[in-house]
Amino acid sequence: MEELEFDDKAAAKEAKRILLSYPKIKRRYKNLAPSIQSPSWSDEKTSGGFKNNVNYEKWIEMGIEVEEIEYGVDKVLGFSIDWYDILHYRYIKTGNQFSQAHYAKKAQYEKTQYYENLNMAFMAFAEVYKKGKIYKDL
Image (cartoon, rainbow, N blue to C red; front, side, top):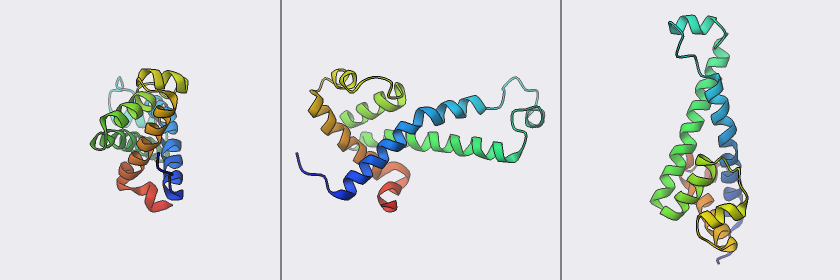
């Protein structure tokens, strides 16, 4: 396998950090969502869901971040269906709750082959997440 350049390693590491944060952000986003049973939005805003605009803004920001991560993973499909499958199953579907061996077996790869593909998937995600924001920020 080709040796990763420093920027690629840093980009892969940042992509992994973002993908690892996905389950927590998604859970917080769902937990803070305004109640659908509320008679109106203005009632919800004063009855405890969003006591001030700061909480509402944070909820919107979390929703945008969830969508950006999901969109980034979906865009990896343009690079490789295998890389997409690896990221989608591991981070979006299961929230990284299983061992590396489980994910390698599920993808039908040897551990080293899985790790190589996972790193390539991270770099692909870094390229498409927020239009290359990870590489631009390095």
